[in-house]
Image (cartoon, rainbow, N blue to C red):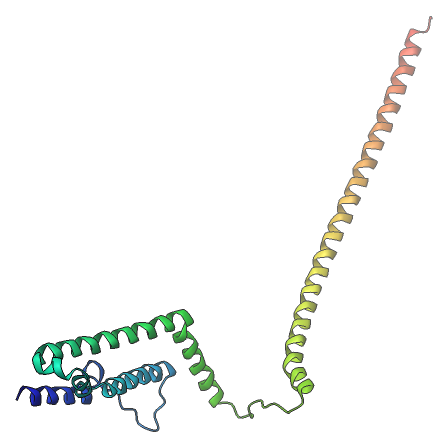
Length: 205
């Protein structure tokens, strides 16, 4: 009786799959995101893995121990399956985190959705490597050239502004020099006139 009951429980475990849940059914015409598709694939894999290592097969491998301790055998099997599922899910989660799969797959979904609205045909290789390379690299190089030209124009405009500022500074310096020379000449003339006045005043009557 105990053996039949354990076999029934094992069969029920096979039908339920990992953690007693089955992958969500998706209508054929519905679009499933790649991230959800990956999760569904992992769930399906775990279901098939548990089905491949069913409780019946487990008891066949440990028949003598099962006959002596059927309840303990069942607990060992359940714990083994649970730990195996948990370990696989943790490994998959680590791979998702290391590869940033969620962001990458979501970006891929976005690219595919944007491409569905385009009317022009998608790019296809022509079979001539030189032509294909040129068709891919030429637009990029042209964009780089345009960007460099715009940067050069901005730099030239800045240089012109700096040159104008330097010329204005030179003119201001020249004006200050001329003003200084004029003041020096005026001071010399004043000093000379003072000397002449002093000399005239000192002459004897």
